[in-house]
Each structure stands twice: as C-alpha cells, then as structure tokens.
Length: 412
Image: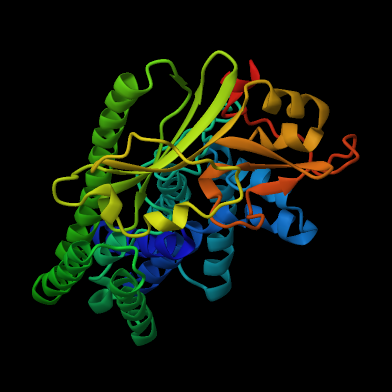
C-alpha cells in the first residue's frame, strides 16, 4: 500500500487503542499515553518501507526490486523493528520525564509490534507480494485484493477529522479525504457510481463521528475498513472463478502458471487480468480487463483499461475471445526456453527472476530488455524493467533468498 494509507490505518488503530485500553493509575496521563500510542502507530506503520534507503543511495533499480518488501517485511524483521521502536519510546519518555509504568510498557510494546505486522498484512493485500515467513518459507505470497492506492479505504478514516487532537492533524486528514474524493471524480479511473459511493461512505462516517462517541466512531471506521477489504477479497475470488472457467473453455491446450488479478481503484467490478501460460514449446502472457458484472459494467467500459495497452513488453493482438466480460489488450509470446536461458547466462536476468511474477523479455539491438508485466505502464523502461548489460559476468546486485515466483517456468 502507499504510505499515506499506511499512516491513516496506523492513526485509526492508534486512536482506538488509546481509547479502549486502561491506563496505569500511576503511569502516563491520558494525553501523554494517547500522543505516544498514536504517534507510535503512525510511525511504526511506515518503518518497514525504510528498506528503500539502500537502493536510493546506490541508485540501482534492480536492488530496489530485490530489497523492497524484503527483510523488513518479515515477521522476524517486525519483532526486531518493534524492539527498536520500543527502546526509542522508552528513551523519549525518560527524556520527557514521563512516568512509564509496567502496564504502559506492555501497551507500547504491543502497539509497536502491531504497527509493523499491520503494515505487512496490508502490503500482502495487493499484487506486489511479501514473504513474511522468511527464512522458513521464502516464497512470495500475494493477496491480489486491493489496488496499491485505494480511496475507499480512506473514507473509513473520515472520523479522524473530528477525533484527532490538533487542528493541523484534523485539517490534514480532511485535505487527504477531499483529495481522494476529487481523484475519484477527476482521474477518469473510477466509474461515477463508485465515486458517488465513496462520497456517501465519507459523509456517513463523518455523520457517525459527529453524533456518536469517539470510540464508537473509531470502531465503525475499522469495521468499514475491514468490510471494504472483504468486499474486494470476495470479488477477487469470484473474478478468478470466472477467469478459470473461461480458460478451461477457450484455452484448454494451455497450462496456466498463475492467475494475477488487480482491481481498479474504488472498483471491485473491473479487474486487470494477467495469465502467464505455457504449452508444449511456448510461454504466453495474455493481458486483459475483466468485468465481474458485465451486464451492468461491460469490460469495454471499465475506466482506465486503455492505459494497459501502451507498454514496453512485445504485445501482439489477440484475435477473438473478446466479450462483455473481457477485452484482451494483447499477449506476449516467447519460446518457452528463452527466459530460463537468459537467467542461466546473465546474472541480472537471474536476479530479476527472484522478483518477477509475470516476466517477459525482448531482444533489442545487441541486448535484451527484461521486465515484469505487472508494472509495465509505459513504452519507456519502467521501474520493473531493466536492460541487460553486454558484460554478462557483471552483477549489479547480490542474489536475494526469495524463491523465484516463476520457478515453474525456470524448471525449479
């Protein structure tokens, strides 16, 4: 998820913890305790993303792909980072002469760990993936449920406008909510009906916050957040069921390696679908837009689907098979042995395969371009596409422990 969403979730949960747990009679005052828990949850909900620093310093794109959502996004990493956050809070309280008692310490420790685990869980929800159980299980795990930025989730945080302690904080949350609703109406990516729904949810949450106790409003916000996530999860399962049925009927000769689905923002009906497949000697990726409810919103009318066609990957036109439920933007067709051969002779290609879930390769002049179709959004090289160096012996990044998502293609 994006960091603003992580922050809103942390603040929402932090305020709830501060108001639903009992303080120590001789410990922190309620304002001190509230400030500490809310700040801790907001900061802790972003700490795992500090893994970008090494690649930001080196400027190495491949290092970013391999290290982002790396060790800081694991259960072990969460416990270590939580211990560090706890020590920082302990030092802060001593510096401020705040009386941190045993019960307060337990609450601070629990909040620190919760913030980090919440971050990992939220990141699991989208199609980038995490591997939380390293080193026991080094596979990437994908939720394929929530778009990287989901404005509907922001509406669940609307009660904070009336609950946060400072005027500046309330104004910032209000500005973020207004920006999310403006994006729903003005970006062209959200159907007008869902933009109206987002507005209605935001107004309803503001009404609840205005007319009920803060704890009630906060719990309502968390309930809405979970309900939105559950709605997308159920829609994702339904969409995959429909896609599987289509493949069995229209492409019975193909073996599907993965069903990669991503919802459009604020829209649980329209899904970006990628199908990496093989047959006897070919590796094929088919990409399209799938509508879960074509009678109401056909795939051809899903906002934003046209942005998925102008890409770097060598897409060719798919003949036939379009319907109200699906429009195909194209397919990549390669020899089944090409990517495994590249991974054997080029260490950067091998390293990328430890990240790429929908890998592709394109011969260009005297070199190769390799990438991941999940993040191919433009004709130029994007953040998940690299040009292989002519010196195949040069490795720009160390090999990570994560298992290649397409080990089934590599023969692993």
